[in-house]
Structures are given as structure tokens and as C-alpha cells.
Length: 470
Ligand code: UDX
Ligand code: UDX
Image (cartoon, rainbow, N blue to C red; front, side, top):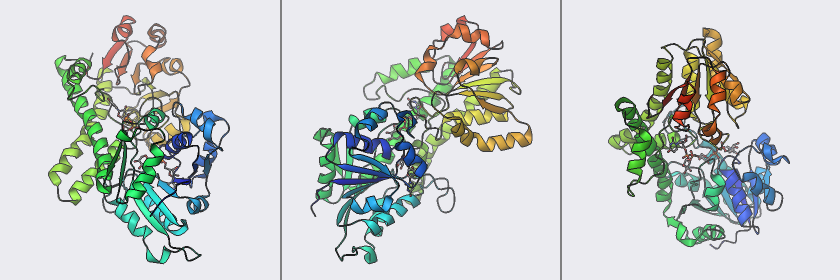
């Protein structure tokens, strides 16, 4: 099979599909890229002439979109049409953890991947490369291949044979730095059987990425590498978070410990920031997926090892809520607490699995009134995350929450502030002004170790920091 790639279709215009295709379009002006999604509201938002209204907030994304949208990058809900004209199709739909049935709570639900593969089988023409962009359980490519090879579908209406080649090309971008990561990745991984198909995809990346950074493996290594990379990254966070608890008990300081171990080049200094637990759409889902695979292949010890990474993460999150309640004399009922940050990390509007959610829920359950401020997350998104909580609090007279439009608004009259997201603006808050707005004795709980502790204490605010204590 030889491939001449001119048109690309990407199914799924989410946090991964949108920015990834935007950068490919930007770097490859000769390719036509159609990003399709069944969610029309999302497509309309991608097509919004006001670039501040794009559905995904990523630094630098608006500039890239401005350069290529309607030049060689198009967003549309005409899924079938764009599948049929594409030479290469990326599947970038979401793969959440299954809620029901076999593997519920662990296995990834690949129903949308399967559905996309069926659409591709039906509407594609000629020879087509199908690229798994979504993070998937190992061996999913087999399912996709089986669907694509369904005998009653492998001819076009004109009697022409359809031919498919499946590749795995996991995306390693992190939200908040997606454009930088896509423009200058540590590596690009392509897994597959067909050398021609691998070459075709490689030739796209070669437009801006050095060949030494492009790794080629078999399909299963590629799929497993993505799960493993996320599991290792998450494991580092659970490791440092577990040590943060020992620091608080002993008087050691987690920043000093992280600094000391990070200088060992074998350990490295990245991903060693203690915090309220990792969030985001990938880490928990991918580890649970790995756990499910291990159990499936009768490796219970390995499953247990990785399961612990998730358990420590949840423990850390709730541990912080307990510290807050304890420091506020064991009760926060009817106390006002300002929550600074709701996204799962800085520079994104994504709230999936955000550690702020667990902390807010715990505090509402304890009866507190929360004033939530985030520079990018919209009220309706917070509402979705805390929805069931609202129902319970109405029934049981628990605490409540409301949105604040500024830090000052949130902290006015508050007994405590909790910094939950590492937004840069929280590093340089005006503590003198804030201290005057709060109700004494006031507290700051810094779950991200962002602030200058001495500056906070100087203005009479009690301080607690993760892994530093108070
Ligand atoms: C990505 C990856 O693809 C996923 O595997 C990874 O683990 C997390 O990141 P992401 O882009 O973050 O997913 O997901 P999301 O922002 O939810 O976007 C997925 C899009 O696919 C949605 O806009 C959804 O409407 C669309 N979709 C889903 C389709 O167009 N068709 C479908 O059948 C299902
Ligand atoms: C992650 C992977 O980094 C990326 O390669 C993969 O493609 C998708 O999953 P993402 O979830 O977008 O990316 O963000 P990441 O920067 O990894 O942060 C995940 C969570 O860990 C965030 O909640 C972040 O605040 C937290 N974190 C990160 C820490 O608590 N401490 C750290 O040192 C680093």
C-alpha cells in the first residue's frame, strides 16, 4: 500500500483533538484538516469569530487558530462527509472509565472509539490510515482492525476495495502547555505494523520535528507506553504527596526534600511538587485502566501496586479537607471559606477530576459557605461539578457555594482561604489588603505551596502549607 496524504479528518474536537489538529494544520499548510464532532455547540464554539470564546483555553491556541482556521483547518459536524474524503483519520474521542457492566469503575469505556471505527468502516473510501489518538486499553487496535475489516463493508458503492491501516499515535501533551508540547514534543510515538503507513504519518511530523524524536514501535508497545507514562507521572505525585504528610509530622519541609532529591539526575527535578492530589482527565482513568488490564491478565500484585497510586491520591485530597476543619477549631459550619482556583491545574479551564472538587465537596458537607474564584472556569462548569452536592445540601441543610468574580470578592468576610490551583496570579496576592478583608483569626491553606509564607504571616494570617505544616 502506498499513501499520499492530502486530507485529514479528526473525529473529536476536544482538549486533545482541537489543539493537536490546529498545530498540524499550522505546520503543514499543504494538508487540509477537518475536525469533526457530534457536539454542534462545541463545533460552533471552535468557529466563533471571538477567539476568547474557543471551547478550550490553552495559552497560544488562539494565535494558531487565527492563522489556520478556514485556511486549511475546518471545524464541522458533517462527520460522514469528511470521513469519506479523508486519506488519514485520527480518532480522538473521549474514553472515560466505565460506570456500568464488566470492568465498571476501572476499564475504559471504548464505545465511542468503536462507534467512530464503525463510521470510518462505512464511509471511508480507497486506502485510509486510521490513527488512534485517544488513550486506549492495550489491544484496542485489534478491535478497530476487526471492525474495519468487516467483510460486508469493505467495498465502496462503486465496487472499489477499501483498505485500512491502523496506527497508534498517543498524545503526550499536557493541558495548559499543549501548544508548546505539540510544537516541541519530547518525542512522538508511532506504533503500527505497516511501515508505509508509519512513514506517511512520520512525514507529517517531520515538517517540524527532528527524526531522532520520532519513535517507531509495534502497536501494543505504543498503546502500553502511553498508559505507562501517565502511570509513572502520577506515581511521582503520589510518592511526593505521601512524603508531604511525613514532613508535616516531623518538621521537614517538602520543598527542601523535593529540591534535595531532585538534584539527583537519576530522579530529576520535575513532577515533584506536592499538592492536593493529581487531577485531569487522564491520570486516574489510565491507571485504573492499567489496573483492569493487570487483573485481566491475572497479575493481581501488579494491579494492587498501581491501584495504590490512585488510593494515595484520594487520601491526600481528603486529608487536606480534614486539616482545614481541624485548624478551624473542628467546625466550619457557617464559616465562609474562599476557594482560589477550580481548574485541575493552572492555564486551563478544564475541571475534570480537579482536586478542588473533592475539597469543595468535603467542606460543603461540613456546612461551610464557599466563595469560589477561578480566572477561567465558568460558573456553569462549577455547577456541573458540584451539582449533586447542591441537591444534598438543599435536603440536609449543609453548606453552599457561590461564584466570586475576583479574589477580593471571595476573601471578603472569609475565615479562611484555600489555594487549590497553581494559577500564577495567586503567587503575588496582596496580603496586607486581604488580611484587612478577612475575619480574624484568619487562615490561609496553601495546597500548592505558592505563596511567600513570611509575607502572609506578617499580616496576621495563620498559615498552613502542604508538606510544610504551620
Ligand atoms: C482525550 C483523549 O482522546 C482521551 O483518550 C484521553 O484519555 C483524554 O484526552 P479529550 O480530547 O480530552 O480526550 O476529550 P474531550 O475534550 O471530551 O473531547 C472528545 C470529543 O469527542 C468531544 O467533543 C465529543 O463530543 C467528541 N465525540 C465523542 C464525537 O465527536 N463522537 C463520538 O462518538 C464521541
Ligand atoms: C497528563 C500528562 O502530563 C500528559 O503527558 C498526558 O498526555 C495527559 O496527562 P495533564 O493531565 O494535562 O497531562 O497535566 P499534568 O501537568 O500532567 O498534571 C496532572 C495533575 O498533576 C494536575 O492536577 C497537576 O496539578 C498535578 N501535578 C503535576 C502535581 O500535583 N504535582 C506536580 O509536580 C505535577
